[in-house]
Amino acid sequence: MRSGLNRFLPTAPFINRAVRHLCTIKRRGTGRATRDRPAPGNTFRVWMGGPVRDFELRLQYRVIPNSEGGFANSGIQYRSRLMDRTHFAMAGYQADMDAAPDYSAILYEERVRGVMALRGERVRFNRENGKEILGSVGDPAKIQSNIRTRDWNDYVILARGNRLQHFINGQLTVDVIDESPRAAMQGLLGFQLHAGDPMSVQFREVRLRKLRLEGR
Image (cartoon, rainbow, N blue to C red):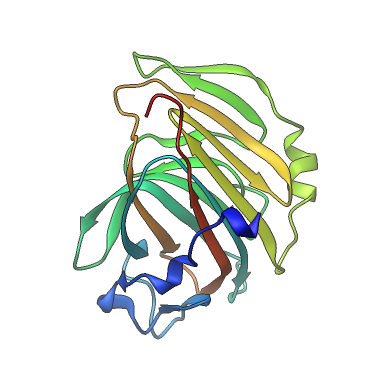
């Protein structure tokens, strides 16, 4: 696959001066919130290589809780909008990841519709923005058992037209067709540092391949 993948994302400029002490992204990026320096709300490292439309994004991630509560959550924004340049808030589709067995691999829409597809769901959002369950891509518990805790996992996001798919460690986790008027067909990429208890999130080997669909 490497021959078809273009440059590592981190070679393009990122913005987020407000949280530079929390997160630096090169070929490996680490976001960290501590009790002394918490994240100022959900904040994102934003890739400024321009909007993405149809693409395949591959990376490795791990999330590590640094508190007794065990909280650690993050996500990858795609086809998203930058809402606040002070705190670098974003809105749009998010491929979620979590240290607990709650949200990893789901499709969440930050600041918009919330949870769009739970782990294992195959769904369609119709033109009235109603959610229809079309079937299953696998047992949620089995998908979760395939996700390594406090260790590196492979994440793949495929966005082709109005179809959105997430894969973790080779397993399809959600399959969504978004025909709603709210569907986003292009937008920015971002990497989340979640508000809340102390935690760390790391990304590495971030690779993007833009896709060309027939008729476009």
